[in-house]
Length: 188
Image 1 (tube, one colour):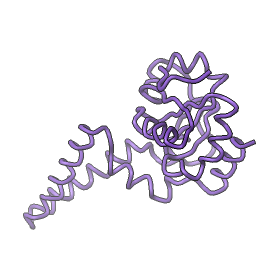
Image 2 (image 1 turned 60 degrees about the vertical axis):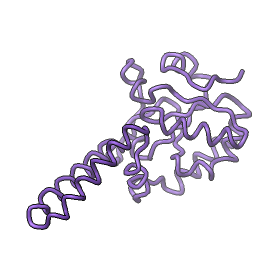
Image 3 (image 1 turned 90 degrees about the vertical axis):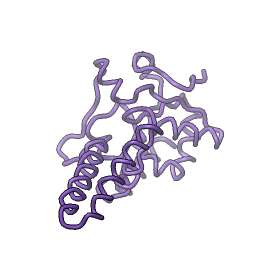
């Protein structure tokens, strides 16, 4: 049975036992709370995971998940371009938890902040820096204006360039072992 292009949290919950769930968020976001049984393949590593995802799609329906649904929609389109059918979770893990569905959390490890929190810290720090430095050097205020413009663009396009940049930081990358273990589990 082929999945539709999107499932609501309640639809996904009812079918969770038969879905292969792929969480495309950063490892830190994944560790902070993910759907039960979800595998973590960050969006930046989707191309590397393509062979394993093709194999997994042959065994069951893929459901791609992120925080809001934007990254998982991007991942679904990228997989569709490669002939792999997958669905996205409408509203992402945010909708999932708001409807009272449980998540699993990493235990015993220090996890990075969720990407949304990292973006808020970075954006706020840059704006504040621009305003403070702007008291001595007027041109520094352009930093604040640039961040504000980026946030408006982010809201209008439902994308986030700052999150893409922050996702590349070492603490937001999966360890090679984690990614290899995930790919082996999907391929096997």
